[in-house]
Length: 192
Image (cartoon, rainbow, N blue to C red):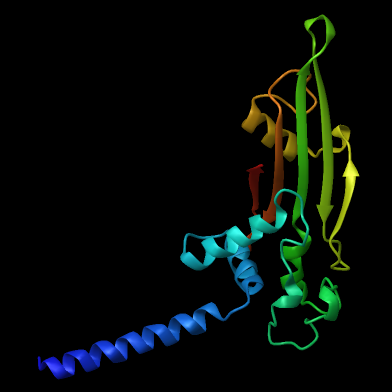
């Protein structure tokens, strides 16, 4: 191969790769979160970045919704809401809203300390967050008795004890439950 043609080919390939990378990075992260969430966050660079952003948004406690559909255009002008509105049921197709609506977020903390008489004392905090069909992200305090069975099972798997068990090690975590396109639930435990 002629060296001149070789360098010209490398230059064209480099510009093509740069152009493609620029186009690929231009998509809104929330579109990637939606697509990767629907696919169960498959292994890829794009889905790894989407999952990392999803987790960043929910840790240690959500300062913003984990999935912000109003930032993903989806070919509709109705979805982009001024002021960061949640993208209510009237602006998002039901087949897309189902992913947002299936997200459950739990902030859990359990602290175990030694009390008088050598008896352990535990204190706990529970908060719950979700997006109702209105699309607005809501969070509110909850209590130990309000934990769904799937969450108590997850806590037992991670800590060896149930959340209400008097003994066991303390922890602070965010637990998020979501669904993929088949309706299968996925759970992510994030300690902080």
